[in-house]
Length: 178
Image (cartoon, rainbow, N blue to C red; front, side, top):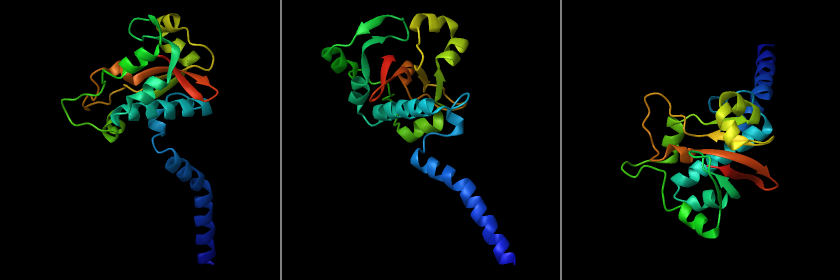
């Protein structure tokens, strides 16, 4: 009798926790500490995409980020819009946003930063003046990967390189502001 109760309990626990364990294994960098407000499928995809871009920096593969730039990109600092030429894509990677005075890696980033994603409404509510400057549209996602946790060391020489406004495309996302 006790064996049957234990088996039923174990089976129920596995059925309830199993899908969550699989999801965590499949997308290990996405967890509740990295997401603000309710998570949607699009926001989860944008979070994963943004973290892949950050990982590309740490892996020394900035070209992935450069190739993700839209044809027109807004500079987050100034609000100025730029046309992205092939030469500008090449030049984009000449400045590495990762600190080079200390040894850093992507795991250090995951341990030191809390990434955040916001849809248009959340962004406009939190940053009304920036919304006017960037004019996010429905479907756009603000990825902020520069939220340094308390008592952690800054890993970027240019923290704004860890912030993107992403627009969905048929192939995933493109960066419309950086």
